[in-house]
Image 1 (cartoon, rainbow, N blue to C red):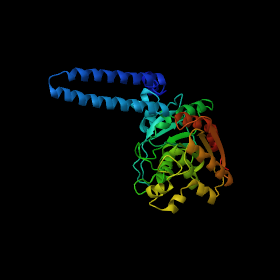
Image 2 (cartoon, rainbow, N blue to C red; image 1 turned 30 degrees about the vertical axis):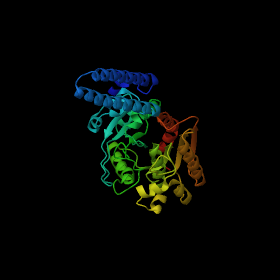
Image 3 (cartoon, rainbow, N blue to C red; image 1 turned 180 degrees about the horizontal axis):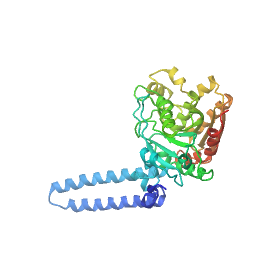
Image 4 (cartoon, one colour; image 1 turned 135 degrees about the vertical axis):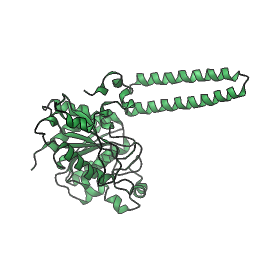
Length: 374
């Protein structure tokens, strides 16, 4: 078990008792500030009064902002523990050298931080997070399949472990299958916390090339996995879900299986299925042709991709992604792409839904990538 998963690091912060305590603490701070200002107001020195009021304004702003962020975090169920906030949660993992020098298989899978340079793409990516199952330590080392998990925006590769429960899902499967499970690869798709690449190649970030060339090259070489193709799947949450569909349709020789968890209809610069004009201008240099070449609905209407299959899962309270999932599932069926559609009653756009979607689809994903080559 990772050291970051015990003790104070494991204390939950997204439960309402924790949030309520934080809000009450903020109220107490504000009360103390107000009382301090009143006392300062009785001072004979004007400079003292001015400084007290400026300080009160600053403290009040910080407290209100912090409480707003705590409330948003609780709603999204994003950073779930003290360790996640401090950066010492499960995804902190170990280094590649430590992993490669290990000789004894752990009882559960191991999380490792892996820099994946953009040799072909020149994309300045943040380090990927990789989970390897206990079976990976066997000698001779087995060739395992791969599931690539893509984060959203704002986001980071560690989200799938720290907030999405990916390692827990994979560990549970491995425990029931003699330590055997696919390698989970969680690469960067944006380059920074707030960027939004939509996983396409632009003049500033060639993310599509990174995910389809650089990531498979490094993962295959470093971990000795099965080659890309039928034994590789790509899945993602929100932006990452839209990316997964697009990447599988455009690169079926790399990813033969996809999972879309609450993604939109395709690449979008906003949070809705609209905004196509802004997307064409912002991501595709004003070229409608380039946009169409990355639009899942257009690709499904104009291409046949034998052997490709996908999983759509979304909450019915998540309006635009729900509409996208229903539309793309129908389009995939018409195109001969096998798929499953799961609509979760009351589900929203949060990590409760994302983690559930991975758990629901994981056995199906494993079955797809683990099937013997035809």
